[in-house]
Length: 299
Image 1: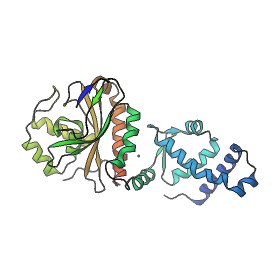
Image 2: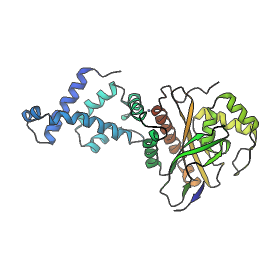
Image 3: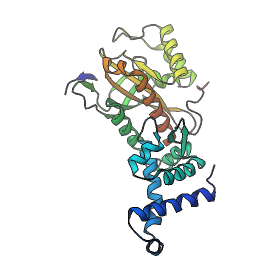
Image 4: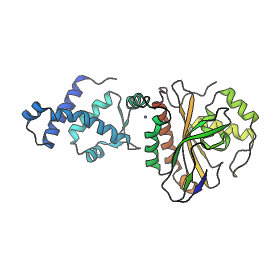
């Protein structure tokens, strides 16, 4: 590990209205007469495709998209798109706030159902890639080691920056000295956490590494309160940002992290912490976690 160059069912009426709107819109785009569309069904089949295009566009936008932005991206009239968004909103597939539309709980539940057919951590890979594309830094998935003394990297997508954070799958580091280690330890069972704090020798790796039990407990309390950790305690000149990933019962399963040159991370730390926390919640949904994120720490 080093720095190396290189987020209730829809009523029938809105759904019918949105399909009708798409029929009209699609017939214009394809220059089909109504009679032809009714016979062939060409326009009707475009409606479910448009739904998926809308969801995909919103999923790819970190801060959501406005009606105007969606219209511009998809080339759909506002009247048609507004009807569709209203239907998706009533079904819980999107949420609207301040004129911007984001994925809703039902969209994440659907993603979880789809992804559960794949094994962990492969079922998190699409979200890993989305986070990588948004932040431009190295993105990793880590899990706690068998004895809860270290974290293990199980997936990584490296940054394209010429000076980037280099890490290999299988790399292990002490929990207390890394952002993902602290993020997972903060939500570990209380007896596991207590045993770790009482028995672990705290060795300094950088000037920011915690070396006292009091400081470690303070960092864990902060991690539980914010559900995200920013740390430069493992490799000098590199900073990591991490948030915990939870399983169906609210147990901490893993952590998602980004890491890069400290000056780059610190310059955009507010934006990056938001990205990582959102990604961690999305990954938790994929694993079947259905509670409010984050859950209450285990007793």
